[in-house]
Image (tube, rainbow, N blue to C red):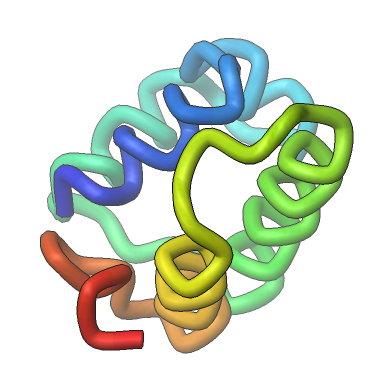
Length: 87
């Protein structure tokens, strides 16, 4: 579950910023990142789009394979520790 927060931080977003971008509270994002709450698939898709858009704005900070793996995990709703290494 730490990957959820790690990717958000990697693109420079706070929980509050991400929450506002998808129409949720920062508390909801916090619980989701800790694995204490599952979001609806539509919300996970919104998060994935926000992350993808932020990644497109920034220079690469990790390998493309790692990013693809993490985003695949977001889209699949799993996004667990080390998921980027399985890509």
